[in-house]
Length: 576
Image 1 (cartoon, rainbow, N blue to C red):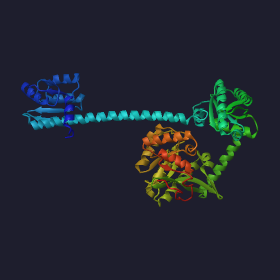
Image 2: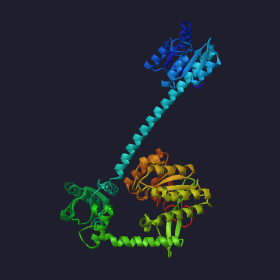
Image 3: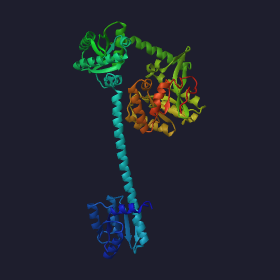
């Protein structure tokens, strides 16, 4: 018996509601005496019509019915009752031991058949089995309810953690302004906008003369002044990097923008900052250079403002507004050089696979990194991949890397990872090639696909299908560069990766940046709850490694363990 705990069995059965249909008074009373040993709530009916009426007025957990009754017999009653209550157990009690009746009741899906005169043991066993079925259904519902409640609680906790991380992720700890990541996000939401990018000239001299503590106070004071000016003009204020700030708005005419930038330049240049540093107050006169960009010039507002700022500094101008002519020459030159480099590399087998170790407890895996070799020089993807991203050469480069890495690791016992963008996974040609190479080389359980997390997902269904198909083959999934760009915590629940690679921008300064440490700690805790193993990228020093170890990081990658090399090298130090 499933319910071995007699006390629990009795308590459960006493709480059930039972309906018993029997037209014979003597049989009804004698059976009721037996049923009262199990149930406290028993209703009776003398025929099927009365029984149906009662079942429509009240919910019953168990039905017991005779077959032969006036007005509506037990079989017809059961047929009608089953239409509205398909899962409620029904037990037939009858003096008819005929095959015809037995088969009819089986077709109705009854839960027990008790013959009169009743055998006490048989009656008790049949009742117990029905109660056990009800108990299992009850426990299953309770389990589902508890599971739903647990999922709701966990989701709430993850949402709170996500909000906390978002607050840290989008704000600068020194000035309390929103940061570069927030700026890029807000730009992406604008249909039209304007951006002023301000750089404090020769700010490093303040740190050299007065010290970094005074320098930090100067940045706070500058941020406060800038924010007060920006609020009057309807701008949002950001700290983009060390001594670089930005103001963002939803768009005005060019004349108005230039006037605002000019007034801002004049105010900031001629209004000294007062810094309270013991034992005296210091006055600093800061000068700035401003780069201006309009949304009407294109969608890459930040890049355009940076280009205008760079040209303004180069031309020794206080401010400069971006125009397409500023980048046309450089853009064409960069694209032309990148295309020439890639075409020659594909033609002359200049695409190289470099391997960087990732140390994990008890094993070393290798990330496969693309390089192009030409004339003794080595080019990283930064030099060519963005320029050829939307050309056929991009797919050819990806295919070449897949071929090289699979061929190499078919003769190795080590696991290896390749980088794929969301676009790669949605390209049938790439997907087909991966499956072919897995079948040819037998490396399914060695392969780890690193998803480039910095891109947004356009077709989530297809991406999820690709991942599920790969996992079915034994391939593992990692999210690369987590913590930069498109960091959506909720989509981790959907993609269900095996590994989470924390971006190097958070790792590299963790020994000196409390904000970075707090974010990494939160990410590691978040991942642990989801049973996802974390890997710290850019672990470049012993001090950084020591700061990471207490956070529960699973694996490490960086120059401390090994640089990318043309052949897989053993890690320089071990991690147990």
